[in-house]
Image 1 (tube, one colour):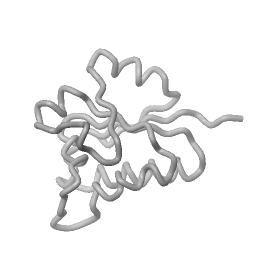
Image 2: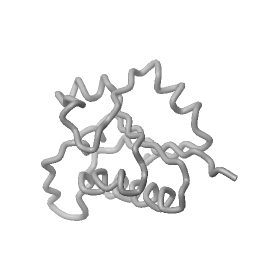
Image 3: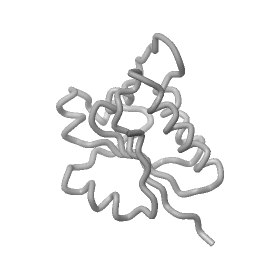
Length: 119
């Protein structure tokens, strides 16, 4: 029996508190147990996609995101408008990120059995 598909929506700024890191912890646990898991990054969380992060304390969200492919989480999406307004070019990001337009986000959410957020 296939597992439920899970979409994690990250919206919080990465270092204001531990919400983003804690959501990524939960995501990695799901992925470690072979649950099909995807990630949508939007709003203030798009800053977490930048590779040159130096957190003043706590864990590096960037390093956690870079570990996603190790856990077979290869579906990483980001709100295209939020990337553009933050001046982030998706083509330069590692791991690879698929920009997704706002009208397509509802369809992305609908394709998953469970949607969890860092909010």
